[in-house]
Length: 197
Image (tube, rainbow, N blue to C red):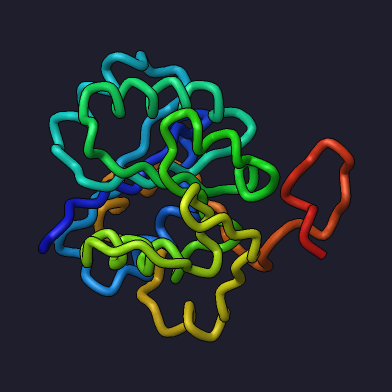
């Protein structure tokens, strides 16, 4: 069974590009049924919902950050009302820690930590029509608190996320952050990105 998967987020502005989604896209074993679409927090939520619904996706993976969690959850709830069988997975620093309540608000699974492998393992589980525990994926039926890390040597074998064909036309107009290390070396009390040491 083939599944249509959307990787998406609400960026802070058009000029930003989401590197995490690009790594996840490049880590997909089979990209034929995977799309990557980015929106901004300034766009009309109804328009975003309509654009997503037009794609008739089976699984939607949202990249969540402190600046987009409220709007993302509003969009997720609306999408789930319109498409009851839609599977929604969320990941990112804002949801990797202490976010089980999202599973009661329309989210089916939470990616804990780095999702390059666990997200595609979850998609495969859905494709098979089974339910089992996956390290780094937290669901109601399989509560999981294993924070997943990706072996960086595996990423070195993937295609480069910095110069993807989908980005070529806008390359001169947008930022793409260069990842020189994973995670943040600082420990600001308000920030969830620094929880892992």
